[in-house]
Length: 489
Image (tube, rainbow, N blue to C red; front, side):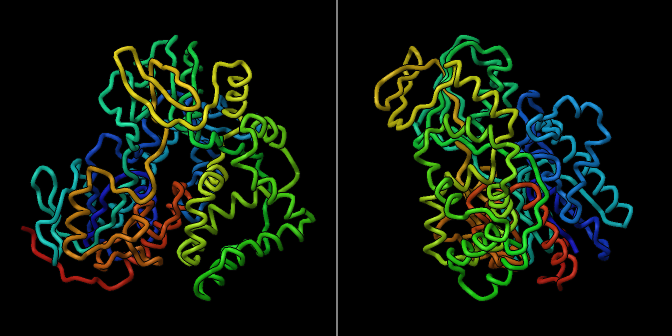
């Protein structure tokens, strides 16, 4: 079996780790990655220490059957104690350190595979198209060709949108990461406008001020919704909100969102917590003053109530199971009306960053503004129009790429797959795939991560990618080959 893995980020690391744990007959694996961020992806590049991961170690493992994998790796690094989040009682480490974990896990997986007889090659180039589609022969930007039997697209998300057509304007940053570079381009006294108010915007505000920025920072967004504040982990033993219950619902056919709500209501009832009170609180996400909610949630970090912890867990673990099975009208409702609420719940900010942000809001150095309608570049900086008109010296984009968007570096390859009929777009974006195997129309092509139309519209977290990778690895090595081996060209 000759397997090609296109892209070398978190999904690819999880896939290699999963393949290394199988007892399959050895074959060949070729990994293609055209960027310098091998194994780290966009999110975990080398960066300033102020840019930290957004979850405790137990929620960052890339090994599907070992939630403690990252914790054990971190325990061997005494420097991790410097990053203790007192609110969580656990280390929240810089993203660059997590990137080291990904790199070392990938290398360890490759070593295990090679010891078992696999031939592993990493090609530092983009796959730009097909030299042949049946059987598959990949072509790289440099013109080399590679015959393969199965291909897994682990290409990550697209690039951030330039929604105000500012690309190329002096002082505008469409891609903030790595912030180590961006910080060097921003004067300490500059008036900074950040487009967005999610986790990336919080990263930017915290990194700037941690490195001595003195000027005002304004977070711009349509709603002004900030991420929820993560709560200290507590043991969760759900009896209704379980993967088994989610699978049972999914097997029955289209799932009504009301059925999912019923599971959650039953869970809270058994715990003695009031579902309606909690639902009312979550329902005010778009209307409650964001600074007030931030302060309130900081006071609830150690709350004994489990409702919000359970909901966050359900989004991460049950969401990938139930999303493909939800009725179309319910998926549209969640994707549009409740996007910000679900995104803020699924990726809450850690108390360390939340405390820093609260202090910046209290001091007046950071402010929130909503309703921006225009940002234009001029000789003296940028003019921003919302309920008034004001100016900034620097504009930094913090709006992440929308789900299901094809990364530009693989656009030509995806276009060729679509033209040949090997893949098809879904109406809401992304490539259609079979939920269990993530197979495209052509059964020897698969997709992992947010490019799959059946994945949720929020960023896939490392454990979610690891679970998908583990399921796919079993399919890749145990199912019959769908095409006959081809000769090298």
